[in-house]
Length: 345
Image (cartoon, rainbow, N blue to C red):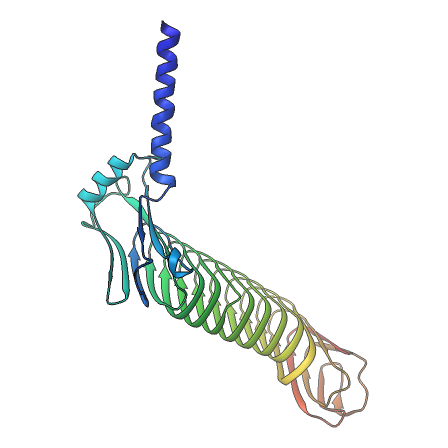
């Protein structure tokens, strides 16, 4: 009899755990948007993440996820609903082609032990504009076209397949952007940045991590005060700056303006743009440029080593080179307190 009782108790416990997992791992609320014409999205939450994805009109919907953010890892759906009713204002509505998804605490005095993390996953046709903000999680945007403004102080930014005017900020995580174009302005004070296969006007800034760039085309400005910069396969115009790391730029077909005050630099240019400016106040510079082009050389360093320089007129010694190669043309300006190694290939 005792064995039967224990078995029943175990089955009840398993059923309870499953009910709790279901209440948190599946959407707390799902609302179809397939009958709506949505051109704008306004979303705010203080305890969770926000994602917006472009889909076919028939798949349009919003999913609301609710998690306990205190010590408890699970809550039943009834417990979640009770806490929502007592402590939160949850709004999901569509009016005048604008989707509003907002989760707001009724009182600022709610302790973190009682707080909920409320996240939104939004699926809409791709031609929409977004205005998103959260202080407790990441923001993800995928397959959208429009004007996008978004910010978080508690997570990262993930952007994929966007076009339009894109402005994002985070003070608590990294940034990943790929397959995106037109006008990109992204900044973080708490993590690294990765950008791949993007085009247009691109501005990237971090005060707390590395920057990785690959297969970019356009006008690119990337800055960090706390890590290295790596770039590969860039065309157009590239400006990079770091005060706390090395700079490695390879397979470039662009104008270049690069600076570091905290590490060595490697710059390899496959195809010249309008200018090359490289400066370093804390390390060495390895510079590689095409040898068959007209250059106006201006190099200054503690020591300069040149490989393959022909047809040069001007001044040259161990610390300075100033003059023209192949009759002059593209300005090449490099300076450092260390050494410069110039290879012409």
